[in-house]
View 1 (tube, rainbow, N blue to C red):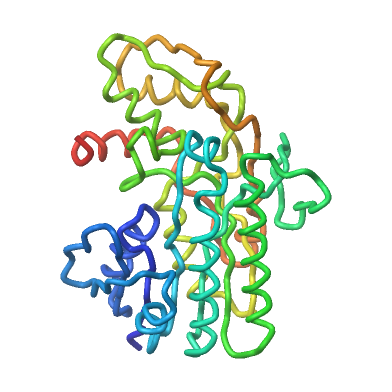
View 2: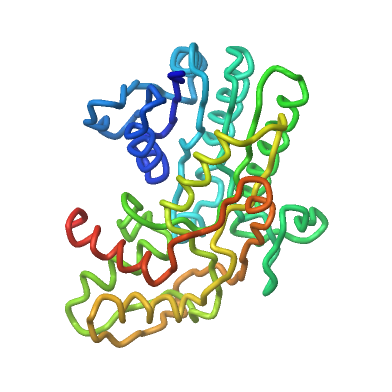
Length: 316
């Protein structure tokens, strides 16, 4: 049976990878939204222009869909978040409120919401979904964004409790791969490091902070595979899943690994005057493995090499 699937934010990093994947599958009629970016030029993706902070636009694109994947978000790197921590909160809150409400009104059978792992406290031990402790202080740079994510996870649970449709909240770790942001002003640590390494001309690369903080890094292909599995296999009205690599790597070692995989010889300089998020988080994804048979398949080294090859072909 052909199902109509809408991917909001289909021109963004996660959304584009999802749209291109599902467009290659035989049982989905794929729709994607775009707003300020150019629409995707793909024969199997129907692109819909929409401002997702406007109620009428949201209802128009959601009506008649069987599955909605909410991948639209206003995101930013550490520099902008440090300077303007409020800048991405309001529009994301409005967008998520309208999308969840409209999905309920239009009886969309399955709604998937991308949350992320910024609400977790720093820990050397991989954290389960149940390890979130609201009494522990959230890292200041993440405070507004984290509570925003937690609220909309709970809204998914609330709408699911009304008995009309099914919801999945996805707490993913740091995602990387094709179509990530590689602009140094907007990128996260992985994309920024790829750009710095590939564009280095003086034999040096600058890293913000000490490089001691650690990140759980998952290739986008593994996230896309999770989404497909949860669409096929989720039975209960609401589920919350961690989706990550399952172990962390220090920024310092990540930079070294990217340099090694690039074949370049670069000296690393640590700029302590620049902002950095001094947190260490990795995700325990045993629930996803138990329920869905999902676990990451692409090693970090293979993922780095794959991303470097993609960057060399597409991002110049």
